[in-house]
Length: 506
Image (cartoon, rainbow, N blue to C red; front, side):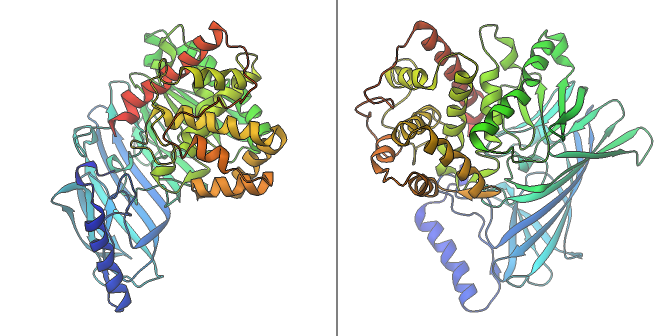
C-alpha cells in the first residue's frame, strides 16, 4: 500500500525482531508500521486489532472541506508504547482512553500517523482512540495518488486497495476486519450515502442534515467503506425484507445515461436472487448500489457497490455483467475476505466466474463456452500472460488474476461435477463468512467437500507459470461462435478498463 516505502525482507525482519524482543522482555515497544503484506508491506499496522470504528464527519461539497472525528476501539496484541494509524489528513488532536496522546506524521510518509499514549497500553487491553481532523481531501496526495474524487455535483471516496487514508484513520489491511458506524453531515439539498442501514437523518444545526449509517451487523475490510455525497436521486425499498438503497448522481441525467443506470442497478435484486441459488444466502443486512458521474471504476463496497458512468456510456456494452461481478463480491471479497493481497484471485477470479454463471442463467454464452474462448484467446485477444502465477502474481491487478482465476474455477467444476462444485462454493462462503481466507484454505475445503485430491487442478491453473495443456473443459470442447467471442471481449474490456483506469494505479 505505501508504494514509495516498500520494505525489503531484511529490513522487515529487523522491525519484527525489535518488536518481538520488547515483548519477550516484558517491556512496552512500538507496534510495527506495517503488517508485512507480501505486496504492500506497510499496509496496516502491528500491535493491535480493531473491533469497531465510529466515524462522524461534516462535509461542505462547495469547497471540499471535511472535518471529522473517528473513534476506534481496539485490543492490543502486545505491550504498546506507540502505534501507527494509516491516515493522511491534518490531525488536530488524539486521545487514548480519554487522555491526550502525542501524535505526528512519519516524515517519510504522510499517511503514517504515529500515536504515543501518555501511558503504555498493556497486551490484551481494550483501548479507545479518538482522532479529530480537518482538511481538503482532494488536495492530499499519498504516494503521488489523489484518490478522493471531488466534482461539482458529487464527491466519491472509493478505491482499492486503499481509500481510508483520505477520510478516516484505520488499520488499513483486509486482515483486520471491523464493524462500522458512519455519520455524515452535509448542507440541506445534498445527500450522503455509505454502507449498511440508514438508521436516521437528524438536524443538529440549521441548514445541515446528518445521515446516520449503521454497518455494525457484520465486520468489514478497511477498503470497503465508502462515501458518496452531493446532489443525488435516491430510491429506497426492500429486498426480501432487507433495506435497499440505490442512489444516482443527478449529473447522469445531463449526460443521458440516468435511465440506463437505473435499469441496470434495479436488476441487482434479480442477480442476487440467482446467486443465492449458487453461493447460499445473501450475507449482509442491506443492499443497493450507487451510480456516479465522471468515475472510471466500479467497486464492491460492502452492502452497496459503487459504479462509475463509463459502464452506462458504451452502447455496445451489456452492463449487467459488471453488476453481476460486483454483486458476487458481496460473498467473495466482502463476506469472505482475503487474508492478504496475494490471494486476490479468491476475490476477482470468483467474481469473474460469477459473470459466466449469470451469462448462462440469462441464456447468453454458457460457462463452458466462455471458459473455452478464454483459454483459446487468452494471450492474443485478452492480453493475458500464461506466465502469470495466479496464486502469486507479480501484480495483483492483472487480467490473469481475473480470467485465469475464473478458468481455474471452471476446471474445478469439471473435475468435481456440478453438485460437488456448487456445494464447495456455498459451504466455503458459509465457513468463512465474516472471516479471512487464503488459497490454501480454499483448496483444502474443496478437497474435503469433494473427497478428491485436487493438486492436478490447482497446480495446473493457479500455481503454474505455463499454459495448461488443455482447456478447462478438457476434451469436451463446446462450439465457440463469433457471438461468444464478442461477448467475452466485452466482459474483459471492462476488466481491463478497471485495471488500467482505477485499480491499476496501485
